[in-house]
Image (cartoon, rainbow, N blue to C red; front, side, top):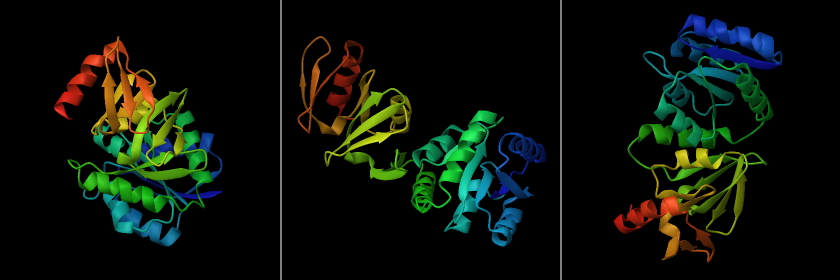
Length: 250
């Protein structure tokens, strides 16, 4: 059984989650429900949970601030949130899990399964560092990103990415050190995560780091020569945007 605490300032949200956990996740043993960050701090300190479901939006101290006050965090975290685009982007950037309210039972089961597999993992401190760094400086570009791989999680520098290639529900990242990293994120998800950075989708299956382009050769859509010597085709529909970005230097 996974020792668990649920933290949410809305009692009905707690009740709804408890009902779902009882029905779909029998391996989860909820030892306490907390309706404030202060109450959660006390319960986490005394009960030493393995897993915490943590609401992002709470009065006085939100879920992120609670985690920061508890650091280092010796348990797995699954965030719960109503749609908050920036918070979700920060969570995804750090490869932590979140559930969007109202919570979908299948997504809940998948998140609990992932958390149970990571109970002995040492990757959480690094992920939380990235999350808090992203939240503290919303206008600044964080140079680290955490990505889920077949082996677990890998933290890399954003500017170490040359280009990303789609492969069904996975994406292959080609890095400056010639390493190829297969991550369990679609290219669309990677594109959304990197939209504030100098990356551009140049056709349906390729996203490139604009700073790593060495040459553009004209053609129907054209061809890019990347810094590792690889040539990549540009789709006709992306040509105008590519040239505009290259000429503007952004």
